[in-house]
Image 1 (cartoon, rainbow, N blue to C red):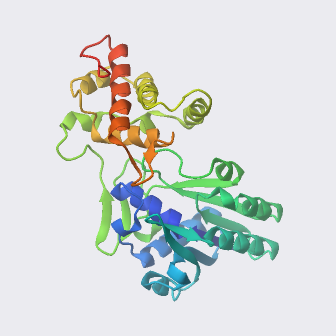
Image 2: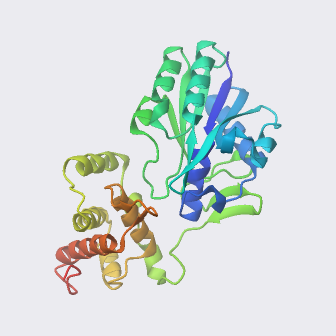
Length: 324
């Protein structure tokens, strides 16, 4: 059948959007206009695949699998089918159960029955890799969509990305599903109007900090893969060392030396955008305190000290070493 199907992992889509827009993955931080979102997904899927839409499957978790108000709204929309897994709370955190299995089963069944020619997956979970590969073996083209990561890095399984036939990064869905370029204000539809994430520095920061590029903006896709390889094989995960590695990469990729001078005069404060990116990078090395998913104060100090030490060494010591 020359039709397309969209499978949406709502936990991934809305959690990643919350991280991008509100700085944390809590879906409660954003309110979503589901009608506009579904319409945007449909139009973009039909444009990307050049196939009419058969159906959008919306996979989500709910306590005791009882539909929540948003699920009741979604399941009466045209061409939308809601599939619910369980939502359980453990150690103060919510976790979905059964959603991945349901997506895998639906994807496999659609491909086996030749119900569509193209499948769009909106997910980041590597558990769907067997289903993706099975769909390809049945002649289905698999399109993998990602939400732009808050730190510019990947928020999807690398194996999933590698196996997909086509890939797209969603940088915001505007009216009618139109995408905005990476340089535009990021906008997501909301019950309160448009949620916007403009560029620039954080409130209270000097204007010049807004002109400092983040490491993600300076890093090509090829460099990103090389960075990951270095992280796995070379970087030990000591907080001080992590800060040094991040600073080294940032300085080596800067297009002009003037950026380092702008940063140096801000010592000991690291601009908010770069500091947030630095701490998210450090979190990959198991430096999160399990109690509240925060890096503890001592490790944060060491990470930032390592960052400033590397800046200091490479700029011939314009200020007192941060590690002392």
